[in-house]
Length: 238
Length: 311
Image (tube, rainbow over all chains, first blue to last red; front, side, top):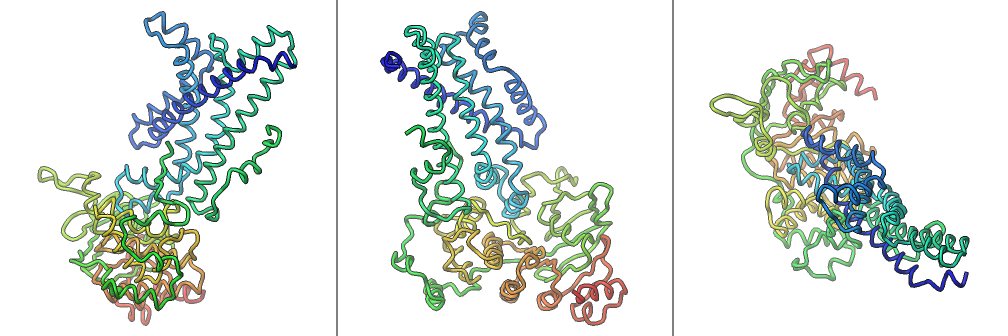
C-alpha cells in the first residue's frame, strides 16, 4: 500500500485531469443540452428536426466510438484536434444529447397554465421562455443533470485508451510499476467515488437554491454542512 | 450558466426592490399595521382607484364564430356583442362554451371560423393588400395589449415574488422603467389590500390573496378589456367574498369592459349589466340580471338556475 501511495503526485495529476475533463465536458454538454433541448420545444418542425437528429445520433453512439472517431478518423480527413479537445468533444456531445432530452422534457413539464399566464401578460415568445418557462423548468432539470454529470465523470475513463493520463491510466501505471493490484485499484475506486460525491454536493446545493426560489422551501440559508449531512455516504470520504 | 434571474427570488425577499428605491429602511422592516399601510398610500397621492387602468374601452363583437375541439363543436356560428365599458356575465352548464369565449379573446385558443372584433379591429385577422388574412404574431401582440385575464387557478409565477409578478409585464412588455412599474405595482397592491406582501412568495399567500395578486397583475398591464374566468371557483368559501368585493370595487371605479364567467349568481347579479345564458355553444337567453335571475323566459335557463341554486 505504501508504494502505491508514494505515487501521490501521479494520483493528483490524474485526478486533476479527470476533474478538468468532467468540467469542460460538462460545460459543453450543458450548452448543447440547452441549445438543442430548446430547439426541441420549437413550434417550427425543422427546428425540432435539428433536435431529433442531434439527440438520436449522439445518444445512439458509444462515447468511446465517438472518441476514436475524433481522435483517429478525423485527422485522416484533415481535421486534427488535440487529444484533450477530442475527448471533451466526444464526452460533451454524447452527454449533451441526453441533456437535451432532459431540457426538452422539463420545459414541457412546466404547467401549461404558466404558459397561458405569460400569453395573457402579452410576453413575447422569447420572454415566455426566458422569464417563466426556463427558470421553472430548470428546477426540474437539476436532479437529472446531477445524474448526467456523474455519468460524464465516470465516462472520462475512456480517455486512458487514447493516451491521456487520467485517474484510470494512473491506476494502471502504478499497478504495473508496483505490482500491487488490489491496492492500486482500491485507491482509484475511492478517488472516483470522492469526485462523484463532490459533484453530487454541488448539484444538491443548486437544487436547494432553486427550490427556495420557487418557494418550495422556507427561506433559510442552506449551509454546506446541512447538505453534506443529507448526502448519502459522505461520511466515508472524510 | 443557470438561466435564473438572480433578482427574481433571492433570499429574504430583497430581490424585487431596486437599490435606487428611496424609502425609509426602518419602515420596511417593521410589519405594518393596516392603518399604517393606508397612511403610506395617501402619502404617495395614490387613492386606490388611481391605480386602475384609464382610457377608452373598446367593445367586442363575435361574428359567426366557430370553435371546434376535434369533432366536438364548442361554439357554433356564435354572434354577440359587448358595448364599450359594458359588464357582461356568461353563465351556463360546463361545456357550453363560456370559457372558450374568454380563451379565444385572450388568444389561448385558435379561432376556427368567423370574426372576433375588439374595437374596430379583428383579433384573429389582419388586413394585407386589401384582403383579410390570418393574424401574425405581431398583430396578436398588438391586439393583446388591450386585453387582460384572471384565471381560475391564479397562475402566479412561482419563480418571482409578489412585486416581481406585478412588475415583470409592465417592464418587459410595456417598457416602463423599473421605478414606474414598482410604483404602479405598489398602488395596485394597496388597492387589493396586500401592500405588506410585496416581498412575499406566492406560495406563502392564501388562495384569496393569490387571486387578488393575480387581479392586480392583470390590471398592471392597463388592459381595456378584462376577462374573469371563474375567478372564485378555486377558493375556500370564506375567501370568496373578499375577492368578489374587490372586483365589485374595480367594476364600480373603472370604465373597463368586463367579461365574466362565474357560477356565483349573486356576484353575477351585482357586477353585470347583462347576463348571457349559454348552452351548447349558443346563446339561449340574454337580458339584464334581474330578468335572467328573476323571471327567465326559457325553460333551459330555469333548469340551469334551479340546478345551480340547489347546490
